[in-house]
Amino acid sequence: MAHDRMAVLTAMMDQGVIPVFYHPDAEVCRKVIQACADGGAKCIEFTNRGDFAAQVFLDVARHFAKADPSVIMGVGSIVDAPTAGIYIANGAKFVVGPLLNPDVAKVCNRRKIPYSPGCGSMSEIGFAEELGCEIVKVFPGGSVGGPEFVKSVLGPCPWSRIMPTGGVDASEASLRAWFSAGVVCVGIGSNLITKELLVAQDYKGIETKVRDTIALIRSIRGK
Image (cartoon, rainbow, N blue to C red; front, side, top):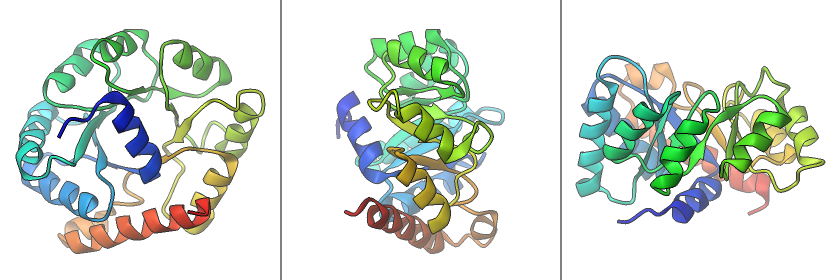
């Protein structure tokens, strides 16, 4: 299944929550990502951490290209253009970073890949948008001002599309605060795919938690 730039952006916003996950074992990654997809989260952010993470990503991306082409594999924790290029060559359909790097934006734009850089100020968000970023990551979300920061940005810049990561959990109180502030989606890591679920290898539990989180977000949005 082809996932062009607009389709990926639409899927991210419609989904509402992007599971953020990394594990050095490709088999564990496949099971977790399939659980997320079965729960309704087809867009998953694989974080670039650990030795040979790009090889793990390639193995997992190849698997889903055959087993479930509806899965949209993205990569996170990207800070430089060469690394972005490796992951794009390995099948990444969107790129996320903890910081803003114009060289990464150029690589992604050349390949029509959405890039969501981490920004912590209005100036950074504005610069990211000038570089063609449609959905800007606010990171770390809880440290730069939380939902009130988002409200402050969207006041003068209502066209901005913001995805906070860090300081977001799967509770109704947290999600309601962020979405009421105007975010288009959120990134959640260990608060969604918890250590307890992973240790227990409870992939059905992960699926249920993802499904419930998406349903909660749709309820908050009034959908």
